[in-house]
Structures are given as C-alpha cells and as structure tokens.
Image 1 (cartoon, rainbow, N blue to C red):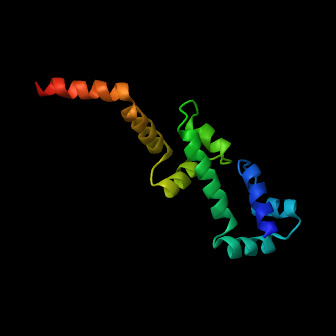
Image 2: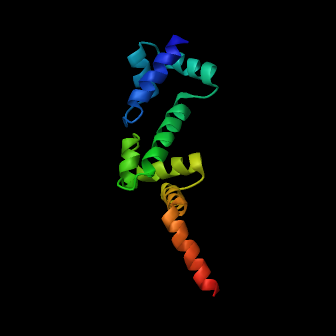
Image 3: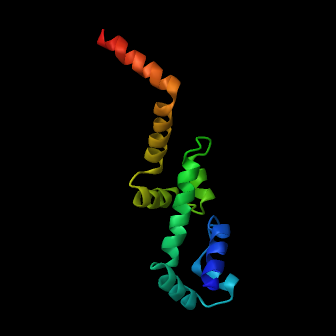
Length: 129
C-alpha cells in the first residue's frame, strides 16, 4: 500500500534518531498510531519496533566493519543511546556481541588477504621443519 511505502521511506530516513517511534511516524503520516500499528502487522507480519530494530541492526553491521568507530558511536549512529541495550539487541540479531562481530569480520578480512595468507602459510611450513 502507499501508506506502507511512505512509512518505510520515513523509517529509512529517521531510524537513526533516538526518539523515533511509532507515534512520531504516525504523526508524520497523519494517521493514528493504532491504525499504523495494525497496517504494519497486516503488511509485514510483524510490528513496527521489530522492523525498526532490524533496520538499526543492519546498519550497525555495516558500521561495525569500520574500525574507526567505537561501539558506542555505532550505537548512537543507529539511534540507540544505551550501549548495553544496543549490545543486547545486536546479540539477539546476530548471535554475537558487537565486539565479537567486529573481530570476526576483521579477522576474516585479514585471513583473506593474500599477503597475510602467504605469511601464515610460510610460517606453518617453517614450524613443521
């Protein structure tokens, strides 16, 4: 529906705002929050807050691969001020804490780097001798 297309467009634009809520979205779209909540459930099979958190966690995954951002900065850029709550949500979404996820991604990149692979491969050959 055009209402849901508009709702998703607004969410894409505002998900990073800490005070973004179903009520603020409903106000923006000039509908009641009850009506909008029902439309979310009908059209997506889930509720507004789950979709909002999904958007935030997808963005967090993108930002966590950039080592220049502290985890608290990533949380803030995703609209979540409480780092502990962010970590809890992130773990629920990915099965890893933000720190574990970042380490896993960066380690994976490191292991896929040809020069590192050669270095490690060479080191393991040396150890065998």
